[in-house]
Amino acid sequence: MTENHELQAPPVVFPGGQASPESAYRTAFDLLARRAPKEALEVLEPALEQEPDNTGLRTLRAWAYLMRVQLQRAEAELEKLVEENPSDDWAQHALGRCLERQSRYADALPHLRLAAVMSGDPDHGLAALRVEQLLAD
Image (tube, rainbow, N blue to C red; front, side, top):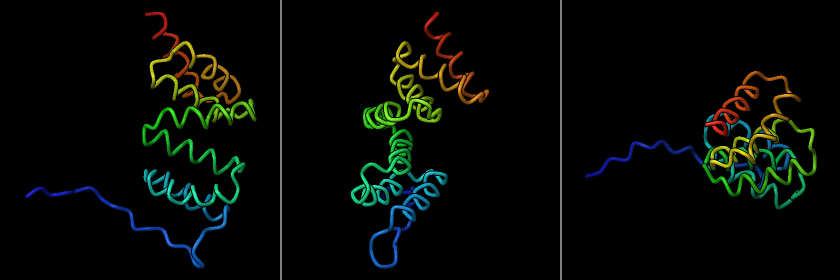
């Protein structure tokens, strides 16, 4: 007999059926913070049907894709987010990390460098240095 020890999050139920985009955002953010990307996507997709251009919801969807290692989907979403708002340092960094995880270091480096400069975040700077080192090896 095989035992399954994987914990399953209970389904998210919203009063009246479907969540508003605002409550979907809050719920999905909380689920992602708790490392439950599958459940977050289940909340985000219906909200994105209502508001397909909602940048906040699309950002959370990209985060969920990254957590689930759905890198092509994450890359496609992040490229659109960066194209629409090049000054979004989170999207720049996430796109760089997504490309790095696909061993596309030369493609990743400009995004990581830009995110590091824009945010001043030491972790972003370390990511850029790490990829620079990988390219130098």
